[in-house]
Picture 1 (tube, rainbow, N blue to C red):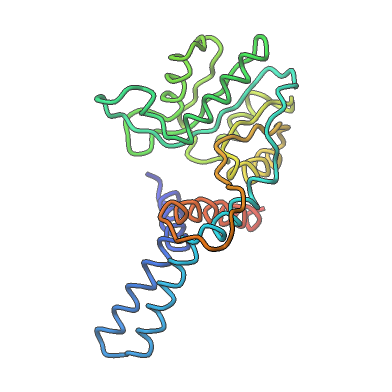
Picture 2 (cartoon, rainbow, N blue to C red; picture 1 turned 180 degrees about the vertical axis):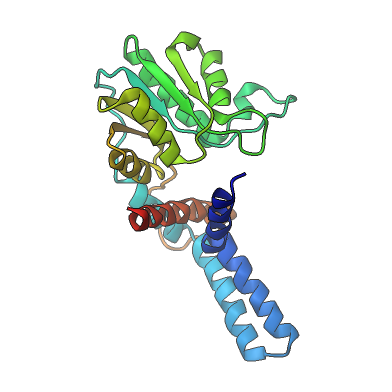
Length: 248
């Protein structure tokens, strides 16, 4: 793994919910160990306060909605040649079927891409994404899932080198140029992805999928680990968007 990419992942860990809570908790324990009770209480209260906040359903849903409401669902109207499905997580456990190899979000991205492909005659699906900690690229894994549900290999372009969205955009630019194309990714990731692709000189049409937002059901909700995970997803995107503004 390249040092710059590793460093970016390391920094991201400490500014996302789990990293923030973990760091504050460790600092609190340190001050408790050296008998600095006031500082220990401060950091431990901050840790537990953030843990509650990020796990609180209305707050997590607020973070998610602000991202997912920016682009509506795709209308299946455009006649384009290319459909670009962005990469997501996967595993290569041979004891599992292909339907379990691709992450939940990745499966929804592939499925949405295939649905659009079947509605557009002679269209081509682009799959991108690197191997991560496995020996098979995410692009290959997503393409295998698409093939399993009926997409012909000659209707797919598979490129397994891009490590992030910007590298995926640069590859698409070489292939698509300035022609409009459909961009498929998770709804939370779509605002950042659209900005990256447009900044690269491309003309994407948003087709968000993998939505997480809930209808509002009151403030009397118990904290939940699943909502902490949603907060993590949202904060990751906000940090990514801020980083893109800094780099621009």
